[in-house]
Amino acid sequence: MKNTICIITGSTLGNAEYLAEYCEDQLQQQGYKTALLHGPDWQAVQDYREWLIITSTHGAGELPDNLYPLFEHIENAVDQLNQLHFSVIGLGNSDYDTFCFAVDKVERILQSKQANKRCPSLKIDVLQNLDHDQQAGEWLPNLYDQLSKSYLS
Image (cartoon, rainbow, N blue to C red; front, side, top):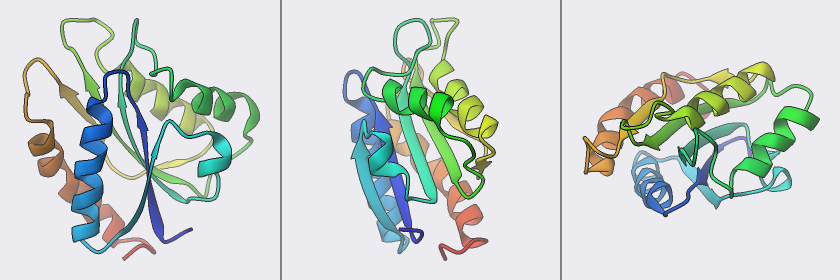
């Protein structure tokens, strides 16, 4: 599965899932193979070497309930992920001081396991940007550029 981009979503209201479907379509149009997994467990994702995580921030800056178990497992049970490359898109509300903290948690956990971050994460403010697809579409070329330098191209 090393030539497939695993798109992992964590969502409370479904917005991250919709955005993931858009990103999957865009990646496929660029010729990439994808696997879209909503709230997967470790067994479902452990063999992929390229992750795009799309998550909302829940409650007081937490990962959504359907994504929390995966990252809790990674943080507590997984030794090293130095073969993993990842990118993150987050949805959040800038009215809260925990704006897109789920993105920060994903980055912190994965990087503590030696995973490699592909490009700067995208944090979408759902109050200021109603067209999440457009914002992701403007960000995706950063990811394409990094992917083109790797074994996925």
